[in-house]
Length: 243
DNA sequence: AAAGATCGCAACCGCGTGGGC
DNA sequence: CGCCCACGCGGTTGCGATCTT
Image 1 (cartoon, rainbow, N blue to C red):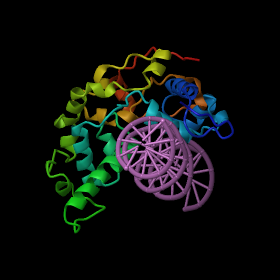
Image 2 (image 1 turned 180 degrees about the vertical axis):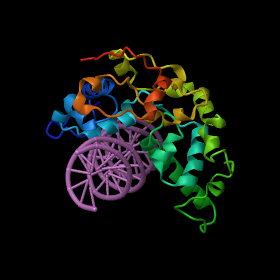
Image 3 (image 1 turned 135 degrees about the horizontal axis):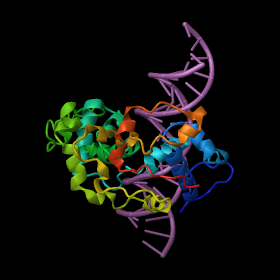
Image 4 (image 1 turned 180 degrees about the horizontal axis):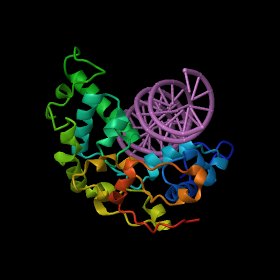
């Protein structure tokens, strides 16, 4: 259920707001969030561009995986956090379909708890904040190919995660919305296979052909390199406006 | 069955950074 | 060079759902 607070229009997003945002982003792309907030009418509802971006990135993005972390992902998070600390966005780029927010939440709930339990069971002299995961998780391999290139795609470990867990998509709650706006079907595995490292940056990969901005000169920006990776999501060119 | 505790996750906030002017 | 704007990141909070007593 969603409670709507009229005055400030903060808090949970309504289905209507989601639809408005999805449609607008599909039209204009994942940039100029203030503009998107304004054009979509959400600005009038006190949704800032920032809020729109967050909603999109963390919930509405079609490349998102929902559901539980696989053991593989769990291990990746452990390893990467051991390397990079709380660089959640960086870690998220190595976990296609997972957002930094999701990983952050996951870490806070699951890992901290486990670490504390472990710590309690072991000698209290072990470190607390900068956990050494080899000690916390003896079954965690000392390295799983996290060294840059290996993780980037050569090993294919990430793609194996995706291929091995298609059921992760089962709980994807936005299906209905995407169907309603006639979204092209999201291919199984989200098109992230192929061992392409760029797939790892799925959340920043563009959805849209650079169309609508052409008609809004004031809103033009140069499309970055990632634009070229659009086909990984299987979006067709014929995505039309929905309002 | 009810109350309290805990969990899980969406959302917000403040700040830093980079690019354009 | 400094200012402004847009964006992204990490930390934190709020709250419904679930579990425990």
